[in-house]
Image (tube, rainbow, N blue to C red; front, side, top):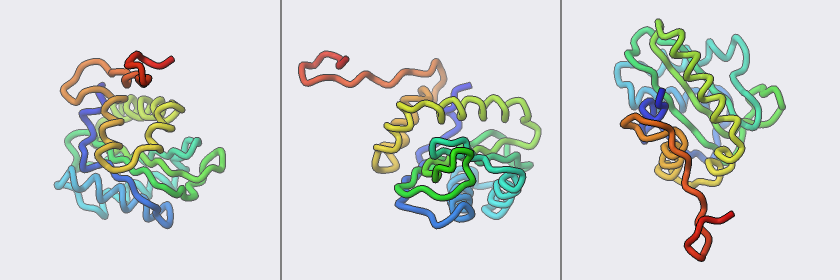
Length: 173
């Protein structure tokens, strides 16, 4: 599955800080409602909070993937927040979370839910991606980097980001 088809520029935000886990989930819910207008903010927030009550969705390395199933959704959707200052998210490594990737899927999409979560967890374990993502400023720059790692939204294979080019015009390395 091409994850780039599940995210839109309006669902990616760089924020200075958020005061708590609850506020971060409210922000993610708002982004998801922006791109899924049939949803209500309280419905999305409540579903994400309910999942957090079962156990933290923090993976470590400053990343969390809050996720939920929703009855009024017709396709999976992703929202991402990068914060300049991390928050406590009960992560297994104790690190504050500064990258939040929310996933909502239709109620009946059990297998798709697990496949997408596995792909997002793989991306979240990529130290190169995380370093580049954290270094980016501005929502558009964050979205562009995500597209480089996730692939073109029209489908096709995931593309590797371009290699840095040295001042000589030849690939560095």
